[in-house]
Length: 364
Ligand SMILES: *Cc1c(COP(=O)(O)O)cnc(C)c1O
Image 1 (cartoon, helix red, strand yellow):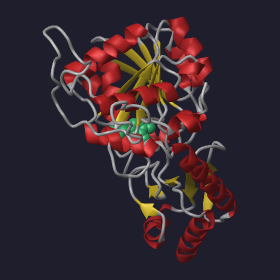
Image 2 (spheres, rainbow, N blue to C red):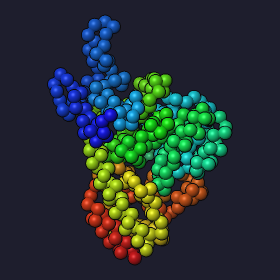
Image 3 (tube, rainbow, N blue to C red):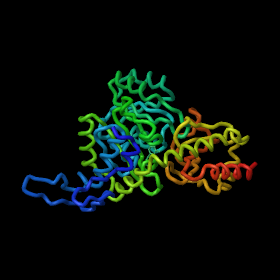
Image 4 (tube, rainbow, N blue to C red):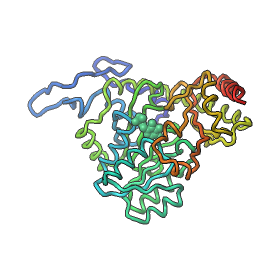
């Protein structure tokens, strides 16, 4: 098998034999001529299939070691596709407490509407206990956001399998560069491609991958039926971003390590959460009173709500990404008011460390 760097760099090359285009052409045509009655070129109508989007879908399937890839209008649309495409009304879903805020908001909304039931678990032990009841799906993120706790996908896949439940893993934070959940026993992988995969803070997109034919068929039917497909131009932007993912990821990780080393020595920081890989970290500041001035004092690292792009961003989960999670729930699993999250960009490491240091000095 080809290495991930090669798959990424070559994405879309050789996809257009007619012209030999190296860079995937953007096929904006919404309709395609049929050669004869009852015949198709494989392309009929853009919602169903499009040559540019196909390159992205085949690419993410290969990168995740899966068979079927689906590109959706956002990461949330990817999560919605998986639930609504694979479940039926009344189904029970077991998930983790420390979830992306938007996923939690959607889950909560579905529960309020009476569509699905959810059980939120703090750790693997709780998950194991929750799986004693009939469960249709287990949905996890690892590492979790923003506390950066890693879960053992293989162990959870075994538990899910024994319970007859599908395992869905949100792989947004680690990407296939670090972990390939399907190879560890997961049934479905979802991504917010808005983050690392596209990587330039310029496109909203989601991706779904699976291997099983029955799941692929259901997801294909649901996506074509509901139409939450990714636009053609945005598909091209994600392909373009993906080509440099491996290179970018090395720098994200290098910068995260440098920042973590510094934060561990910083007296105004009381805790640092970093699993030792990837470009995401969070830390607790000594006093919440300092947060506003600290964010104001940062020069390079931008106070903004996203992650995975080339520019370093800092987020305050309490008022941003996790604002929809009730305070008592948030506090119960350690997402306190002191936590700030950093997504390292690809800038020069020492510049980022110097920026943090001068901002701490400004509030000291
Ligand atoms: C951002 C994000 C999502 C949602 O994706 P969008 O592209 O913003 O819709 C889902 N899961 C995780 C882990 C995320 O970070």
